[in-house]
Amino acid sequence: MMKGINSLSQSSFPVASPLADFPLTAWGEAYGNCGSFFQVGCLNVSEHKGMNLDGVNMEGKAYLERHKVSCHRPLCPTCWSDWANRETDRAVQRLDAFVLKGRSLKLIHVVVGVPTVDYGLSLQKMREKVYRVLKAVHCLGGMLVYHPKRMNKNTKIWYFHPHFHVLGYGWLTDPRKNYFASGYVVRNYGVRKTVHGTIFYELSHCGISPDHHTVTWFGALSYGKLHVKYDEKDDATCPLCHEKLRRLMWIGKGVCPLPDVEGVTFFDDPDNWIRWKFDLA
Image (cartoon, rainbow, N blue to C red; front, top):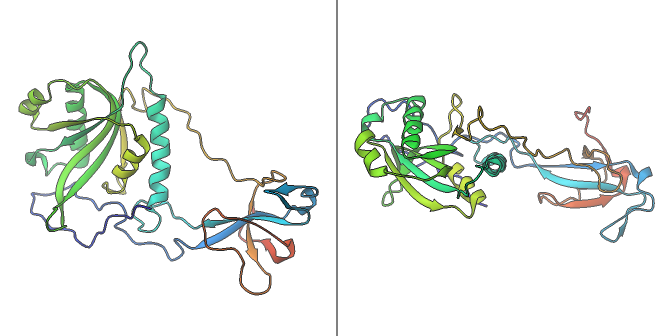
């Protein structure tokens, strides 16, 4: 699994009033239980009669799954990837939902660099200028991810250098002309084949602020112009009786037999388990 970006090498690179200088993904602190494990399962054993799972007779057995505690916060050094995966899944669905009738479009990766003269702007003002720049070079729409810093390859120190990553649709024209008109550098890195991986990577070291969305959508893919019904993951159910899985607590003798492995499945004597007292659903 990709690790978050180490925050220990931050720099106080001198710029005038960097209003948009935010911490990066995973630069915060984890909660005390982040990364610990718990189990969910089904104690509805009366409905497991005559049932088999992966060749195992489940009659009289409780079904269990092992899961990891996650706060899903982008600044958490332990749980940031869960947040990034969820954001990436939704972004891919939105990008896939965009279809321009009569034209075959490829998804391209674009980076827009902010000129130093605008380093003192707020993120909102930077975004407004970037939206205008993207429209001027004929980017129809897409997602925008803000990166406030770059790393010095020699010193490994992060410094304030605001830029935006774009995954979107369009035919980029006159980026050089646009540079002379606006000072904003637009680089087209071409068609993306590994969309999920590209988005996840961009989210792994983007700017995180409690006052601003990390991902925004513009142009033809903005929320006002493109309405998407996202496929959300349903509550997990028992593969045997299809009851909703509940959080369970071990009351058997000795140590809980479930290994600390995310998603591992298990079956056991139901007398070793009870519903977790805080699971009131």
